[in-house]
Image 1: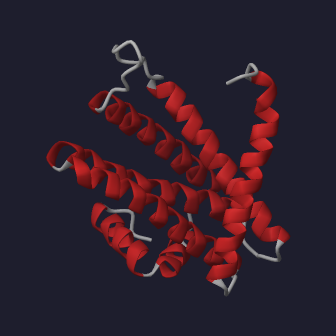
Image 2 (image 1 turned 60 degrees about the vertical axis):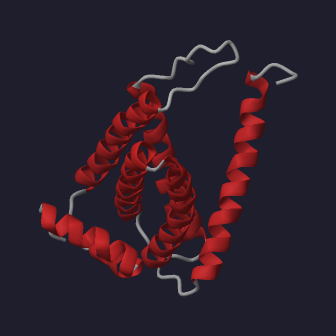
Amino acid sequence: MDVTVGGLIGLFKLTFQAPRRAAALIMQAGLPDSSRWAALVLMAAASAIVMSAVAAMSPTIGPDGEAVAMPGPFFWAGMVGFGMGVTALLVYGVGRWRGGRGSLPDAVLLVAWLQAVQLALVLVQMVLLVVMPPLAFLVEVASVVIFLWLLTNFVAELHGFRSAGMVLAGVIVTFVVMVLVMTVVLMPFFPAGI
């Protein structure tokens, strides 16, 4: 994998044209495990900066008409980093449980790249918020679809699965189970009536 700017742009294009081939190239990069985790941390930090910029561009207004104070970049970096770490563990663990052959370091690297792609889409959305606000919402919806499509292809390539449809079903079921588990775990921390 070519880590120059031109090489990364080429990989970005390939990610949309042939995501499984892009995933294979990413996994063949030969990066040490520490660099893979560093990529995950870097993407969490970059996400925090971008999310803070988005919050500044479109502040949330509370019921009293005042702008609601948003969390700072350290909060966002922690949340995104935690989410990416959990995603990598699930991509690896659930895939291996279902007979896949992928490794955790490869899962970490693929999740970091997936976040880089998502960040690029958020930057497009930020530009559209200024230039053509109605299109920004369409990009946001498209980003969710693209995320699912890329995640499905990346998981299939990581573990050597043939059926993208079965992988997508597994991704959706895993997501639903995680939401239910997180709801049960977090419920005691919220007062009744919320």
